[in-house]
Amino acid sequence: MNAIQKYFHYRQDLIEQYLKGDLSKNEYLTRNYEAVFDLKIKPFKNIDTIEKALFNYQYYNAIAKSVRMNSPAGAEAAGAAYELAEHYYRKKDAATWKIMRMLDFKGAEAYFIRTFSRILRGRLYEIVLEEIPSLPGSTVLHSTDEALLNTLRAEGVFMEGVRQSVVDNYINQKY
Image (tube, rainbow, N blue to C red):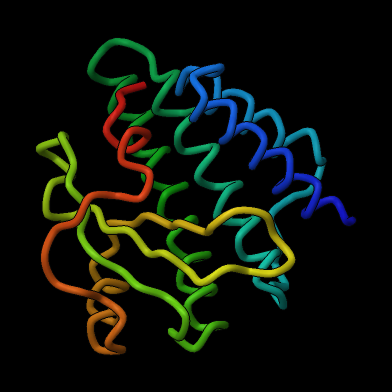
């Protein structure tokens, strides 16, 4: 098992602990963030496997969530933290683009998800990928990228309407 696969197995263990109630959302996010950096793997520039693209997705998502979770009080500092988080979310979306292109937009289903956040309502969508044999658990991606949304629609992957997320409790729990 390579380092990326070890990370995804550890992450799956964290998800199971979260689902059982053994970890809070903050604890899950913190441990996932630590796991990404404990690998001492930087994001991949040459992305030639789905696993590498998914690692990049998780890497940038972990940083963005950590920045949001730990953003300082005060308008100026909070604004800078928001911009930094958005920077990492854009990098995460670039990984999502890569994943979808590698899959030729096959084996995926996307849709808007029900969210308690007014800011994300009608913007946040979920992409559920068919099982990836080399990785544990299901693969669920999230984005608000409008260009990707339009491409998912054009490729026949996006289903109109709003659905409950497959990770609804996680999505709708504040951190």
